Length: 226
Image 1 (cartoon, rainbow, N blue to C red):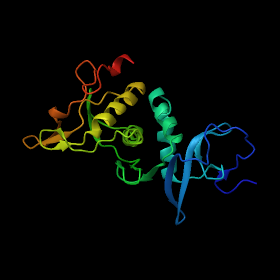
Image 2: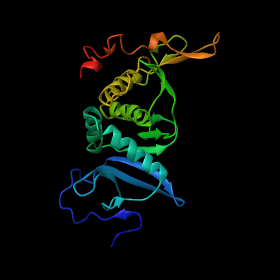
Image 3: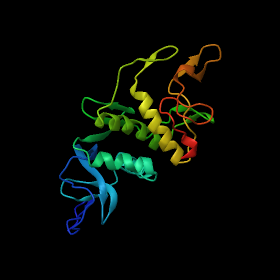
Image 4: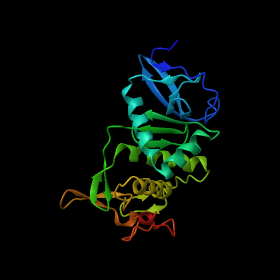
C-alpha cells in the first residue's frame, strides 16, 4: 500500500546502489519535521530520492523538487554523472541542505540556494549562473574532500584578497560541467568592484582559462575540445 508521498520499491530485486550504505542525501523540513532522503538510481523508478526503506519520494516539497531537477541536469553529462556516481558509492555521506551556496567540510554539508543567480564572469561576459551549475560547483568541493585533496588555504593571490586553493579544482570541474552542458566557460573565479564605474569586473589574478579555452591550472586540458 503506497504511503502518502512515497512509492514502495521493495519488489525490485536489483538496485544499482546499496541503500544501506552512505550516499548523497538531501535534508529538508516538511510539516515541521526534518527529513532526510537518499539519492540514487533505482531500476524501477530511476534516479531520485528514496527513504531508508526504499520508498521513492513523490512529494511536492519545493526544495526537493529543485534539488532533483538540478541533479537530473548535472546527470546529463558524462563528467557530472561520474561525480554523482562516485558520491553515492562513497563511504562518507554528503548532504544537500537549503541555504547559501557553500560547502562545509566540517559536516560535509552542501548548501544550495535554488533561487540564487549570481552573475559570473564567462566567455560571454557576466552571466547569471544556472542553479544546477552552482550546485555542481559546491558538489565539486565535496568531491575534492572525498578524494582527500581539499585545500582551503587562502594562498591563491588575488588583486584585493586571497582565494582558497580549493577553488581551482571546483572551477575546473565547473567548466567541465559547463562545457558538456553547452554553457559558456567561466573565465575567472573572483570579481571586484570598479568604484569609478560602480560595475563589477573579473579579478585578473583569478583567471582560470586562457583565450583558447585551456585550463591554466590543469594542464594540458582544453574544455572546448572535449
